[in-house]
Image (cartoon, rainbow, N blue to C red):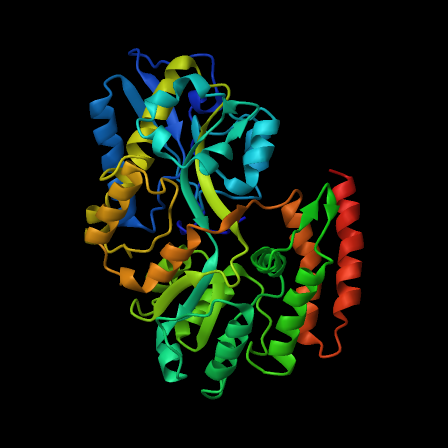
Length: 444
């Protein structure tokens, strides 16, 4: 799960649907047009991005005579509170977005259309990384077109590294190095936090998963909790010692996803785990300085939690709607220089272009073209993200476990405990969490 997200959109808005969005019997309008609804129009609070989207709709309709596109502007684009209900109720758009956390559930319940015979409508589909395509494939059938894939890394403040006598071009590669760097940054004075972490809101448990994967541990194996392990204990013990021995993680327990980014943007927090789009939010949403942030691969790098999204087709869509929907996905999300990948336009609109927040095309010809266009229009210092780009490509991707959100809520408890109680018993905390997690998993 990523509350972004990916982190891309800004506010919630009303939902507008046509009959065909809900898979109505007819795919044509009064004049014989094919009508489709598409998700994720930018919110009115982002006027330039919304204008660009609307211009893309007009350009798409001109290039595809007879196709009419109606956009829905629910923001954030993915709302975990309503997503399952919309799917179950058949109220999803013709073209809808699903985050990687929901791929398996959507496919297993038949809530996305099998598009195996139509992937050629997405011209660059074969350029999408195979491991990313595999995530939307079940029993040999394709159910979506990925357009975002990323791994979690270490976001750090280069300015604070310099002030603390650390080399910003050589970020920490191990958790011991993270602890050492955090200690030095915290020593800069009152209010400085070397390493920021969460203790609630499911985000604490989510970061626990990121950390245990990076150390080579597992969350769930064969349907049972596997985090009560040496790697899991190391996650909690390190955090406990950074709080109570080093005093390098701050005294405030952070709950919501944005809380740590807000703290990071102020300029007194040295490091945090996060995907590259954290930098986008720090600069664009929280007014942080674009010259201060670097990104490195996740410490240890045994594996990294992956995130991403794919666009899927409503299973009730007709053949004509399906064709138009896939053509829209191709146009808006998978073509270099158009739609999402029109970086020159993004730069002109004041977007924080340059963050390597999407590697779903890998080093394919399309992937290389996307990177080239992004760097040509970059307003952010792309050289500060090179450690991440170089390192992330070789890290094993890990999907979130079954019942992820429920497990994260369970693991919030030990994460909060080691940050708030000097006498926290790591072994007992993990044993208690293991029991609760196995009860949850047994109901799967």
